[in-house]
Length: 251
Image (cartoon, rainbow, N blue to C red):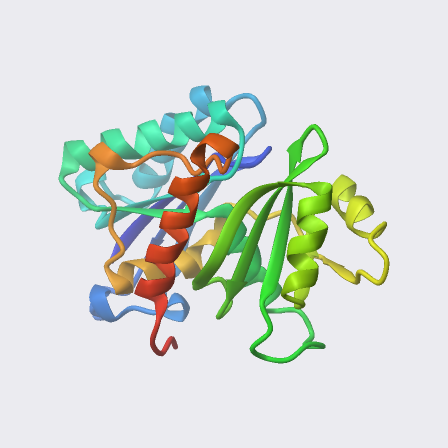
């Protein structure tokens, strides 16, 4: 199995090339069996200039070609409009040129999977609330279970709506941005846990799980997960579909 992951959703992007030993069946591979063959960081405001050269360099450094990649994965948002367009356009083009499948990953789900590594303090089945800054005093909010594998909801909310959403379903609350942490800490009784900003490395476990589950996307219908108000219905549908596909045991 050879997997290429592109992340242009955050302020700092990245490209990761991961693969299994050739003796391991790609369909049965787990995150522990995936070896990171190389990672390239993409600098802020330079995604469009650096993305394709970074992919080329990673492949060449490992003696691989684009046609050797078994699947392409993209962090589809939420994030900046321009950054997401750059990453998704590149992944679509590569998938169409090679006939290989595409996987899309939510940045909120990646953060929920990172939160699974924090010391437990709540019930094991409690949800994880993940919050990102959406600008203008508004927030991206994801509610997850099963270490980011099961999406209960993703939304775009005002501060008051966010507070009400979290209180309606108590659980662990995590964020990585200082402004978000400060805002959450103004909520009476709120205990927020800080995690590091997600990178392309953090996307690997969910990408492998999506590969195992066969959660492939049609390039023609794939779009960014902006989570803005005009996309609210699309976002709820995405979560419902992901939750249905994620039911059942996970290793």
